[in-house]
Image (cartoon, rainbow, N blue to C red; front, side, top):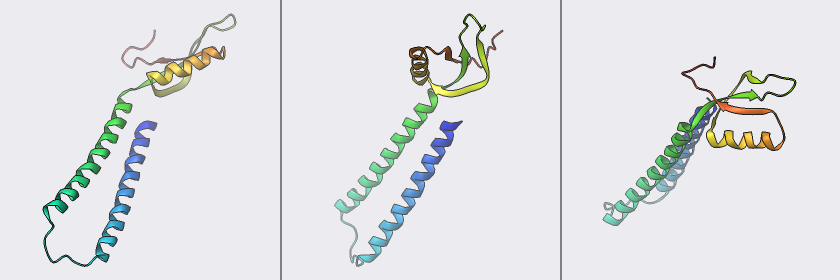
Length: 128
């Protein structure tokens, strides 16, 4: 599924960026002189706040992607009947999309007087 591939690519991209940022931060930290004392409570809180904030942002984005994937359905392209043709499903033309995407594409087809429409595929009951 294209959306799952996209999610996997985006997660890989996040991981690469995170590793790069971690490497840069580590290099910068190594340039500073070693502290003789322990971290102050404020420094510990700042570090923890940044760590949790970053995690919260990432988890929020992952949740958004999961919600997008949950909204996907399989749609079949249909030709509407007219004087010359009986209409019906167009073989081998299916696509995963959200209901909103299907509505928008079908509205465009209708506005352009095209005789095509996307209809959801019922995976449990085949058409007779």
